Length: 607
Ligand SMILES: Nc1ncnc2c1ncn2[C@@H]1O[C@H](COP(=O)(O)OP(=O)(O)OP(=O)(O)O)[C@@H](O)[C@H]1O
Image (cartoon, rainbow, N blue to C red; front, side, top):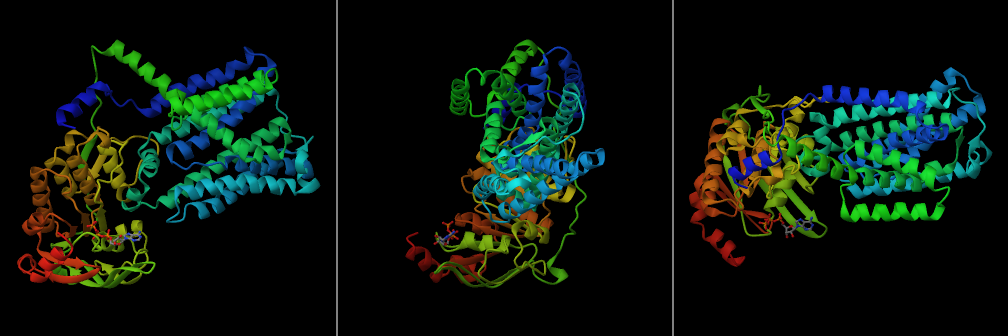
């Protein structure tokens, strides 16, 4: 997209000034709390009774939305954590009796049990290398296991009948309405504030492109596990309220049917919108209570038809449609005075890593005896080479020679079959990518690997998250970058696009953005896989000039995989030729260009 189009995109979306999210949240939360306070005086007792349960469900739906809508973890297991909170409460009250201290203990133990269960699930589902499918399958199994445990608990858990008749916190229905309503408002406000903060964008980044996050030095498994544990705790609190309020628990509350229903409510309301799932749950559960008594079969059919229709016609759910319509109306009214959003500000960072030089002694990168096998297929064999600071080493060779595999082995200590690699004098051992980044490795992929739905500025903030941290409660609107990254941003004009989503950038600008994100890590060694692929001649020349400057001024060691041999000749200080997983030549550009062996390698491969 051209710069002109980008500006039009900005106008079309009527970028507005950044109102403080905290102020907006306080206003909305205050109105909601007043609503909670007065509602019991205007509706009948039955509706109050139903809405208390609906609000309890809405609080778990909110946790499902954080996991699924923001983090991208499709979970069926929140019902199990809900049941943990409810059953712990029911068991304590049944066998120990009720007291205020025991009620508090039930809350704490319920949360602890749910968090312990979630810890086990997180360990299995989020270990490095596990796919998203793992989490879904494991969270699908969890409610089934918990339900079976409750069934087989005999008289202790009440088996299929559950537990009932225990004494609970003595509050009136209206008082429960206020307690649960206030909790829902506080929870939703906190979640809203967090998901709109810089740290909240990280959840979206993980959902969009977890691999990129790992190669930005972020421990995504840990982040996912922490959020999962917090959501389990929210589920347990909802369970505690449910047991106290209804005075009955049954195995169905732990089941995967309930877990799936939560997903349906979230999908209908609008995944990734927070308010959508909360409002959707309130409406559906409230309507169900009123209608399913009179129309038990038709009501389920109606919900099923609505669900299928929304999934097919409105995959983002109902709330985005409502809010888009409201935005459209608002634009009609304020077209005469479109306001511009204050742009994200770039600052120069206080750089952490001092510039290393070859005079410091030691190579930037040492690769010795590296081998890589996929089963019986040997892709790399006996790879030995060194690269120093300030060098641009190009890795060339025919398709399938093993170039990308070698890059992967350097950036991810878990990938090679044997051999050793050290970066800035430190053996990478079996460190995963996020830990290799800490040693000074930065990797740019062949296809531009950025966060499409985030803005350019947000992508850069995520790239700096490891070094600078992220605000958990506000959008700072500021991003600090090292000089090298700032140079790329300014040279390519990306500083004018900081508030534009990365997905609307041209291919060349996306490549430049990813390079800037890698440089934001302050790496010592950067691995670039075909950085000029798909670029115009002018863009290629610009990238070549920038890389040469970076190597010289920042003393970066650059390892480059490239098919464009003219580009290689222009910028490389050394060239390594790979063929069938072996280094056949490691020498100067002239040596490689004049080598008969290299010509035969390329000719033999049909190039
Ligand atoms: N995950 C995998 N499983 C099995 N074989 C693989 C895997 N990844 C790569 N290979 C094989 O390893 C060999 C080297 O692949 P690699 O992508 O490293 O080559 P390359 O030199 O980068 O090629 P290109 O220039 O086309 O990108 C190829 O034969 C490829 O089929």
